[in-house]
Amino acid sequence: MTTYPQIRQVVLDTTDARALAEFYRELFGLTYRPGDEPPVPGGPDPRGTDWLVLHGPGLGLAFQQVARLTPSTWPDGAVPQQLHLDATVPDVAELARQHERALALGATLLLDRTDDPDEPLYVYADPAGHPFCLFVA
Image (cartoon, rainbow, N blue to C red):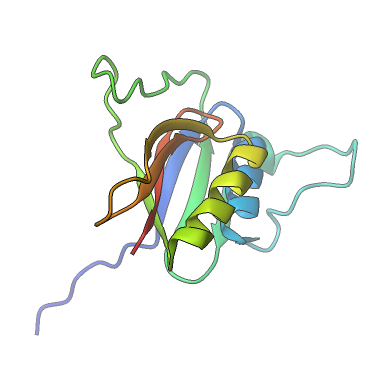
C-alpha cells in the first residue's frame, strides 16, 4: 500500500501576520492553535511577528511574517494570483450575507459574478492582497 503525505495547512505570507490571521479567523470562524491567541491589549505579541496558525473544520491556515510582499494584481496579469482560497456557501442568500461580512472585515471586491446562474461568485483580495473566492456550491 502506498502512503502519501497529508496537507496540513495552507500558509500565507503577509507583512502583518496578526492582522491577516484575525481577518481569516473572523471570516471563517477559525480558532487559534493554543499559544497563538492574541495577547492582552497593549501586551507584546512575539508570535504575531513570526508565525500563527488557525484551525477549523477542514484545512488549517497559517500566516508567515515577511518583510515585503507584492500583492497580486489579478485580474491584471502583472502579478499573478500564485495561490487563492475557495470557500463555498449553500445558497445565494448566504452568499449575499457573507459578501457583506467579507467587506466589513476588510476584503476588497475584485470581481462580482453573482449574475452567473450556474455558479454565482465573488472574488476578493484579503487585506494583504491574496485573492479568495466565495461562491455557491
